Amino acid sequence: RVEGLTGVWVGGRKVAAIGVRARRWVTYHGLALNVTTDLAPFDHIVPCGIQDRGVTSVKELLLERKGEGASLDEGQLLDQVAAALLESFASIFNVNYCVID
Image 1 (cartoon, rainbow, N blue to C red):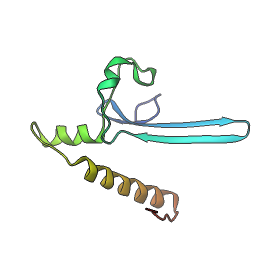
Image 2 (image 1 turned 30 degrees about the vertical axis):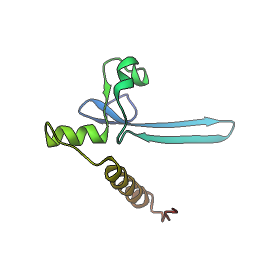
Image 3 (image 1 turned 90 degrees about the vertical axis):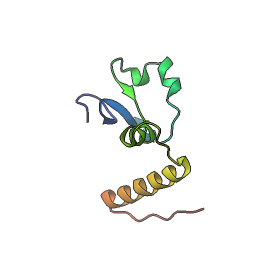
Image 4 (image 1 turned 135 degrees about the vertical axis):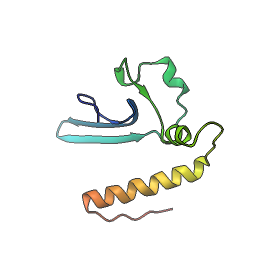
C-alpha cells in the first residue's frame, strides 16, 4: 500500500487499480490487474494522474526476479494468476465460484 493512493503497489510501481463509484443508488466497482500488459503506452501518459510513480505488471516483476534473459509463457501465467485471484477472492469473501468454459 502507498499512503493516500489507491491500488496495489510493488516497489513503488502500480500493478493493480481498484475503483469504486456510486451513482443514483447503483454501485460500480472494478479491478484491473496488469498481468502480461504491454507497458510501453504508459511511457506517453501520466498513469492515474500520479506524476512520480510508474506502473508494472506481474510478468515484469517475475522477469526482474528471474534475471536478464529470462522468459515466461504468457498463457500459462494468465491461467495461474486467474486461478490464484479466484481462489483468494473466494477465500476472503467466503463464497463459492464455478468456472464456465
